[in-house]
Image (cartoon, rainbow, N blue to C red; front, side):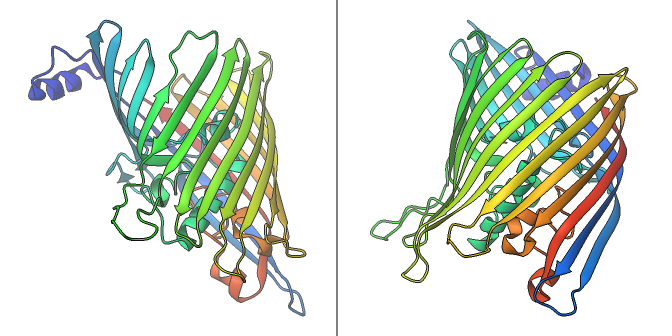
Length: 408
């Protein structure tokens, strides 16, 4: 929604009102009553024990992420334009947020050559997790692949010296977003083909005559290429995030995914395949090189029903332990159902419910994603204390959202 008065005031103060083509204020305010429950069972204890943790909250972002943003474009002539995009997360359930532009903070130059974009932005390898998810990576129905990938990024980042790129509230270690990035996007009009390439600087100090300097921890490189025509859309994405670059003991998270959708009108189908590898160099003879692998599959549909939309997704992620230890793998499955009822183009009521089942949950914390909420995307942490100290493993989880979303 254009706020012309606000734009003119802001630009006049900078002395550039005449050159600015447009400034837009936009946002989403989303709130839901949400319930999460996780059941954990003992392993190695007699008699067996079971613990259930549950939580009821008023949560933001059950359907769309709550946000407040400003974007603008200046026509430079000759087919060139300059633009900016500043977008802040909102915690409207407690009146917080908007203190930083952690969702996106970019400046761009666009022309017949495409777009060069600088700043903090979504990673190229994340897009398929979101674009081909019927639930748009929000709420309890969030793509299971995205949940596991987020947990892995946070868990490994904590294990290698703390979080980067803005912390949990704004993304963890270049899975969802990355800071200090240079991105290039192909121009439109290429017979439906689109794509991007992205590199993020680690910004660490390079010290001469110091082995292993500079550390590349925090760097990211990735790309995405796709084709969309009519109701069809298909894309492949790849990214590498460096968690540690010391020798010995370097570590990278490598992501490869392929997503597709087709809109038949009466139904739209979605699908994604993903392989995420946690690649660790050897530390010593007792800690050899290893690659843990997370293989995910997700399929889903959306079905228009009058002014509303039915959403369904089914997903599975398998964890394969790279150390070759017996009985060390794990897996998780998820079923999500939802309905969105559009009261207008901007306002919608929604309800979602999801169920997760976990096999061998004590074997890998990134598969679980609990604290205690397997379903709650904002709660991206490793396993809760009772899991590791009392021999408990997450076994299953379910939850629901019921809320309202208003966009402006």
